[in-house]
Amino acid sequence: MRKLRVAIAGLTACSGCQLSLLNCEDELPGLLEQIEFHYFPMALSPALLEGEYDAALVEGCISMPHEVELLQELRRRSRYLIALGTCAVWGGVAALRNGEDRELLRQQVYGLNPLACETFNPQPLQSLVQVDAAVSGCPPEKDELLRLLAGLVRGALPVSIDYPVCTECRMRENLCLLTERDILCLGPLVLGGCGARCPSMLVPCEGCRGPVPESNMKEYLELCAQKGFGRLTVLERLHRFCPERKI
Image (cartoon, rainbow, N blue to C red; front, side, top):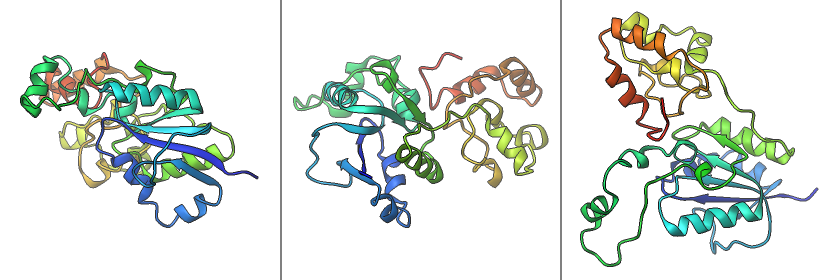
């Protein structure tokens, strides 16, 4: 059986999603028996786009012209294009200042340096190309990445998660941080898949995986108000990882 041909690219992001894959030291030797990471600039050189790919995994949002060209080229060459991580799926923290003057922001960072790159408001991948599947998280969980690659080897895309972090919290029999400890936790509104990693350590969910498809926002805001958390406080925290999402 031929190896799966995979491209992995990073756009505007911190590279944490790619690093999470490279941190799978124990599993990578087995993966390399079935997968050829042909284009992976963070791990392989030279990094040249050549031929067709069974799948392209893309981390980060789009914010520069050369990223548009790379993303379109990956889309053209790949059977599947998968958004990897919250920035790729929702825009992420890079999009937090999208409502401000982009040229002024550029000057604040780079000054008047003529070599400073041209930028535009960061956007998720789906704003430019068709995305076949998404794995959210900042970064995605190690097990999610391994299941993604194992599924691709079998020709299957990952199953979309449609339940909130609260579901996994209850499965772990955690006390509810919001109702029982009066801590602002976004668990009812945020996609699960992390195994309730943060609430299990008494750290409230900050929403890094993006919003759950369906949630009872009205009831949640009413509950937060009873606990002393205003609507604006809740919405600002929700927008931290997906600023462009209309809630």
